[in-house]
Image (cartoon, rainbow over all chains, first blue to last red; front, side):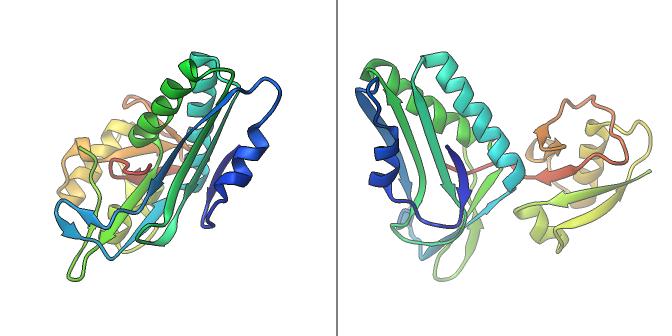
Length: 135
Length: 78
């Protein structure tokens, strides 16, 4: 499942959909809104997305992960809109027979998302706002 | 030729709209569009990403009038 949504996600519910007879492990990554960025307190975050392209890119990355690592299934849910501190931003759930392929697959998916999915974060402090730049 | 473009994130704020039109001399390439945007907004070319019909495009790709063009900064999702 690939989803770009304003809504929060229920991790347990998503994971339960991935449990099949062949699946022996679920490796997950959950990104959340941090309260501090470069030593400065953050009050909230906006996330903007180019939805049609983002979904397409996420599907490509998912297919690559399945092909490259041989995992059974990958779920990616990325939120957009106005988020508060501690809110969930992204869920990546990799279902696989064994952990050996699941961990690198999960790492691959988040690393590629940060390079080529058209989504942008903007952080707000008490006095300013700034688009996040990935080094 | 005039090309319709969609702006996202920093560019949307800078332009003050989510869509706009850009006049491009020949060649109508992605590279030329990027140079034009760089000149218009005084932004380094490497900080300008361009998607054609929802995919990242080769800089030498020749644009057609009905292509969906999107202009945005380096991504920061995840």
